[in-house]
Image (cartoon, rainbow, N blue to C red):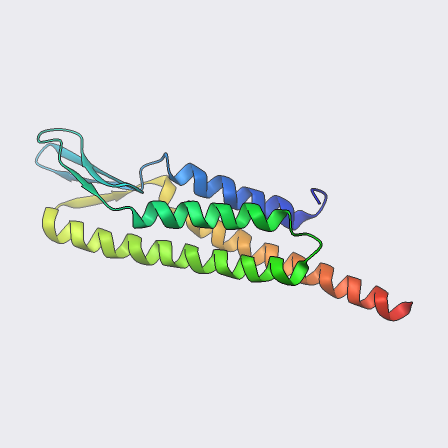
Length: 151
């Protein structure tokens, strides 16, 4: 199980998506006020202390992490593992879509400059690793089918 490279990819995806929960995705800066944007929503750290909660990003990050982690243990059911990997990729794309929607809304309300955080790159890395994991799983499936033909 752990000796397969796609297992490492899936574990890295789970780790990246869990790390996103604790890292800021970016920040808005306007007139000395800093508003931090993360998976839980928008938090203004100076001034009013306003908190705008958005739980969709949190749920998508948790879902993609759990799907990726559960796919690791399905190494005997490769077709199901591929299906879960595609589901995980779809949740990552939805993460970016909702992130863009929330950023557009906050930018219209807050109308200030936005600086991207490092954590906004992690889902993109996870998408790339997800495609690499799917390719590895399909390669294993092809190898197993070719060995079955020889017998």
